[in-house]
Length: 124
Image (tube, rainbow, N blue to C red):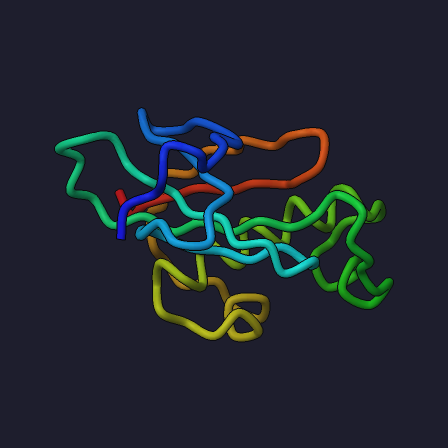
């Protein structure tokens, strides 16, 4: 399905858009409230993309902050979206990526908003 004209554009990256959409096709992620987001690449862009979104207000454990090597919740959520993106693009479980990130070259773009940490990427 394609997104409807009413699907709001949340962010832009790589010439494409991140939509808040219950029906659009594309790389998909759900925030902590269950809202569905989709990355739609620019027309003619045939790269495979991944998307990860976390709500800015989402909780995160101190243990995960330590494992990610950060001290603040905001830094942890940004790092987590990037780790999830790497896991999705390399088809590797996220906890395995946390222990030993796969040696993949990833082209990553941040498209953070006031309400969401947003990471969009593709293998380069």
